Picture 1 (spheres, rainbow, N blue to C red):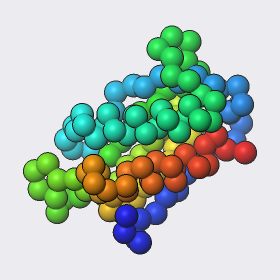
Picture 2: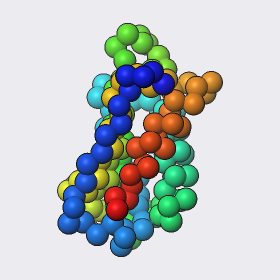
Picture 3: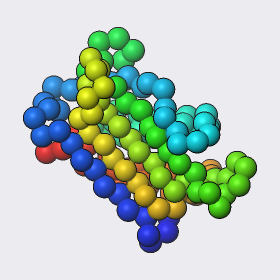
Length: 131
């Protein structure tokens, strides 16, 4: 992960995060092209982090919806393995009102030989749920 990668987050201060212990994944929203392998890897890493924090994935009765957005580096033609942006979004399950968003900007390698993706997911979720 290059030194010019930044991780930020924002959240809804009135939302009761301690009560939000379940979530479900919804369709990702990439900027241009879909990458099912990237999405599977992000979901796997996020699930592990959330499970360690006591949250569980549930298809029914979830309190939160989770989806990712991403954009590949335009210099990585075709099926390059470098992102220039990754967003992790949490909204209320009963609507689309965002309650938390983590954003990574800058170059992130997503290939299996790199630990960049794991590091940025851990960095984003270090502040979830907010205290």
